[in-house]
Length: 166
Image (cartoon, rainbow, N blue to C red; front, side, top):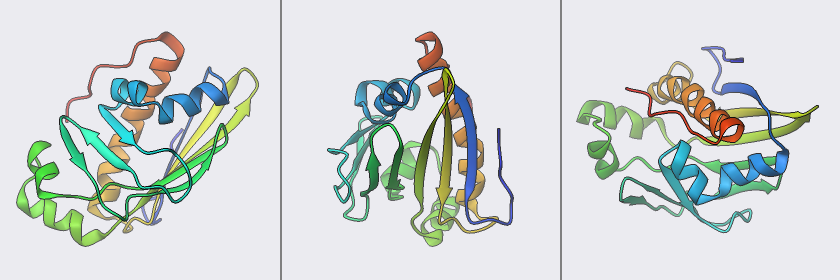
């Protein structure tokens, strides 16, 4: 369920997944699992304040401002979003004009709220500190539903979804 409003600085997306809070936490933090449904792995110890290195497609993105903000296993996870680099933009097919707009919008953060819901778990993704009606907000508004759908499929069936065309 998308609870998004375009005039907000946050993008909010919720889904119900037939899993446990512990298994969902593992899927959000285990590199073998994040690589399957997202194509990204995180090098971190998942302790609040720890740095995070993003690895995607053979590239690493490291920046002192990429950190774990909150880590409460099975309940809540939050971290700053990755740094937009020229190498990343080139690798994912982002042109120079779009890259400049992304960099100008500044750093955002993502928070995962994990709530038991019977034999399911409610996952709420809050991508915050976004420029209202900004470029990043538009991109995450397309990205999070596809990503959460692949995560849900992996946890419920053992198979992630194929990559969604962009």
